[in-house]
Amino acid sequence: MGPSCSGKSTLALALTEAGFRLLSDDRIFCSLKQGQLLAYGLPRPLKLRREAACWFEQLRDQEPMVLQDGERVFYCEPNQRLGQPLPQTCEPQALVVLEQKPNPGFRMTRMRRSDVKSRIEADLLAEAPEDVEKQDHIINSLLGLPCWHLEYGGRPQVIAEQITKSFFDHDGVDSSKSRMPGRTI
Figure 1 (tube, rainbow, N blue to C red):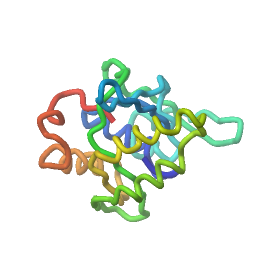
Figure 2: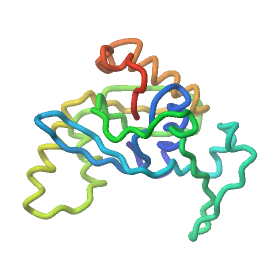
Figure 3: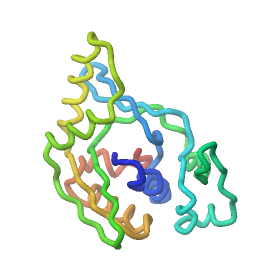
Figure 4: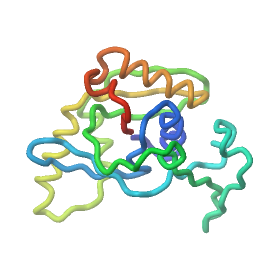
């Protein structure tokens, strides 16, 4: 998660190239089913800004679409391109808050749950009063996951490689689940 223009979609495409499957771009929905936290995605393609073409060979020869507001974007379906089915759900293993920097680098540090909670709550859609308690319960379940702050810059494929090493080569995330093929972002 991260603010607009923090590179979420660009990094997601690089992570699919590293073997992850994309659950959703921009929004996910979470629920608790029999005590298990699940994330659900929207069946939408990744929306990449024009600048992403410099990082991905498959975008270089394409012409971006022009949206009503004049923004030039690419739409990409990485799961289909890789011959993978679109996952319907996944069990979240960690929360990562992105902060893109202008210079190349990679720094991942633990984040206080209270800081992550305020960022989640800032992006929530309004709920009916009777649903707020359920929403709080789901947020608290999310905050039970490891929470990370990723400051990064540079080539997204290099960052994806470093993320993979951080989470799957040691104890960032449950390695018994993480080493399985078909990891989902």
